[in-house]
Length: 175
Image (cartoon, rainbow, N blue to C red; front, side):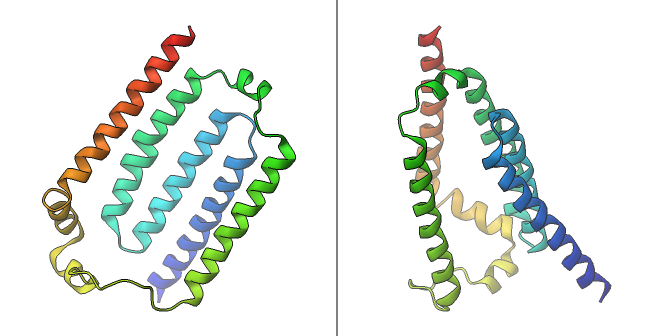
């Protein structure tokens, strides 16, 4: 009984903090402040994963997203001159707001569809939740990542490396 109350309170507080951080990301004018609120959002999502007993995904959330990806985002924000970009807007503000509203409507429709449809299309995989619980999250994911999905994993790392090198080259050309 006490554990379920703790989980409920932790869930509500973390979910509210995640929603608050997400709203702050899109309402701040300073991109560094937005990036810091995004880090807070990533950390709240990691806590939600912990509450769902998905420890591996929570650790990856903190290490990859809150750590590496956000470091890269902050690095790019500091390299680019934000003031110049604001002066050279390519899309007028009313058009951008309309496009944003259309995208919000599409995402909301997908959310409603996902809640209404009980059975998702697709075939059952070889790893059921019971089998993953039996083998362990980390062992299952690591086994698949370094055997069956090794090539896509390496291709993704090369694509990220090319993106980093491209950002450095673009920042050097402007100066």
